[in-house]
Amino acid sequence: MYDLLRTVDSPAQLRTLDMPALHRLAGELRAFILESVSRTGGHLSSNLGSVELTIALHYVFDTPDDRLVWDVGHQSYPHKILTGRREAMGGIRQWGGISGFPRRAESAYDTFGTAHSSTSISAALGMAHAARIRGEQRHSIAVIGDGALSAGMAFEAMNNAGVSEDSPLLVVLNDNDMSISPPVGALRYCFGRLISSRFYQQARQGVHYALRPIPPISHLASRLESQMKGMVVPAPLFEEFGFNYTGPIDGHDLDVLIPALQNLKKLRGPQFLHVITQKGHGYKLAEADPIQYHGPGKFDPKVGLVSAAKAARKSYTQVFSEWLCDEAAQDPRIVGITPAMREGSGLVEFEKRFPERYFDVAIAEQHAVTFAAGLATEGLRPVVAIYSTFLQRGYDQLIHDVALQNLPVAFAIDRAGIVGADGATHMGAFDMAYLRCVPNMVVMAASDENECRQMLHTAVSHDGPCAVRYPRGTGPGVPTEAEMTTLPIGKGEVRRHGGHAAGHRVAILAFGSMVPPSLAAAEALDATVANMRFVKPLDDALVRQLAQTHDVLVTVEEGCLQGGAGSACLECLSDAGISVPMLRLGLPDEFIEHGDPAALLNHYGLDADGIRASIQRFTDKVLATKPSCAVAREAHS
Image (cartoon, rainbow, N blue to C red; front, side):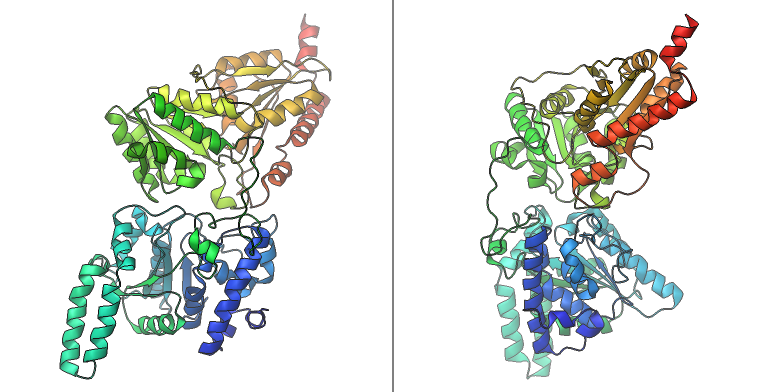
């Protein structure tokens, strides 16, 4: 079935093919991607839309010597397959397998690691300048989507690139009128008018066909085309940045793509090529619903995606979605904000019910945070629904524009902790550490579905910035209460009182998602378990009390240990002058690889068995070197 594709393991082999073979290769590559993703899950519609563009880029440019940077990397599967990783696709995004995004350690063809949006032009421009400084003759190509182009960083890079007249930089705009969610903003309408207008393309072809034989009139036609193009396409926008704009051209037509790229390769200075593609191209179901086919799980390509049976337990995203609608129905001050993650963050229903209070600001996390601050200054209660990994991109705004002014902005932080297949770039490992050091911030970690709901209500009731972190996936199955209650700020609770079953007393201070496995581990250890609830302000009194009544303290968090919740507990005891053996469990000082979340929690000892085993080893070590506090207290008395 893939006779030609099996012969192409590198771009060098690709460049030996003639045009008929390239067309055939595109068909085989698209079929292979569909079959492969249906077996493993992963990003589909974006990759089906980038097949011909990938072939053309590797055919024209001398990769990897010429540097090719894929923005985000959702569309890099064809690139991976054509650069020697075809057989590895069966393990993509799985533990020990290849990444779903470009990764420098994986291949020389992955010139820059990506997964977050809008970095490609900056990186490619840096590579272009490096080549100039080192006297090397090579090209740098950034492939960016129209959704990613909505971020300010892309325009910062273009502003810088436009004055680099000698740098061999090519920016390819892969315009498919889609992000993960439908695109929003003024740029979307600019590109949308272009895609929907056949006037420009038909007129352009007609004028050149009619006037090409007569050179003087042909020159006039080119000038006329330039004026007309300014009315229909966004050429002036990019040309004002100093780019030579070419396009738009059909991104699925190799007979057009390859000559265009070959011509651009010969030109000096920054070039901008605008190609029109279709997400899900070649697979009718994905063409019709590119959102659902953006990142599907396993499915039968002949049948398509089948609606899963209703889960017995709600996901935390569902809990957030229901809470936001309920809260907004009671409080007209509530507004919802998302940086281009409507579906992922659970804002679809809110948009339907409260469209005037729903804001998708496109891929612009910095703007999302400061926009929320502006709303808050006028008496509204903005809720920024954002993934932990993406809030990092708005960190300065969180400090400078929200926390410094002590504005009541609520951050609903989804995907906190281990997220699984998307890997290191998307792990929500750092939010507790980077939030708890910010003055005026309140940081909560939800241990179950109902607590998440009550924490979110607490966040919008508080007169200052609040963050509620919750993990990806389903909770432990705790029913949510319709009534919403404000939790006392900075107060935890003891969920289990332990005894002396092992001859010493152990107290587990668990944060958020680590409460259920800590309770399970405590049964075997007869340990005390505290649901700490607040990372900041920490319940100092509870920490001190448990330290003074137990022989060993254990903190458990689904986040980085450096500066995290366990560190906060250590600081508390140090400030109080209390010394007690203490074990901190959490994610180590390394980037967490992609894999099944349950398997990763097991690998890092953060499931019930792992927590129990770590505590047992630690207490055995402590008791072997010194008597327990209880024994010491008895001897003293």
